[in-house]
Length: 95
Image 1 (cartoon, helix red, strand yellow):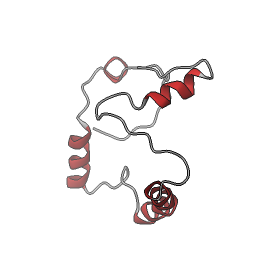
Image 2 (cartoon, rainbow, N blue to C red):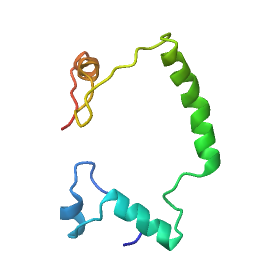
Image 3 (cartoon, helix red, strand yellow):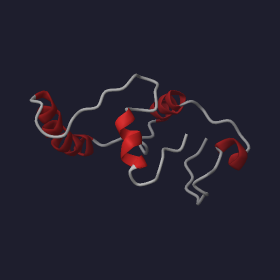
Image 4 (spheres, one colour):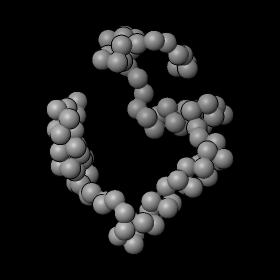
């Protein structure tokens, strides 16, 4: 396995494009850890910056002020509200 950047069509299949099977996400994660390759890992300053954005949203949801928090069944395609949002623009999720 190697890290290579190349242009691809947005409608593509890894197996068809590269004619090989790819490891599962955790296989790749563990391999990179063993190799000491942090290329695809988030730096600590990026994590802290992300929490500066996310934490106020979580706090607002706990106080039930602001935008609603839509819940959905794990493994599903998400809340019905996401379908409704796209349908208003004549669009739909790609499955």
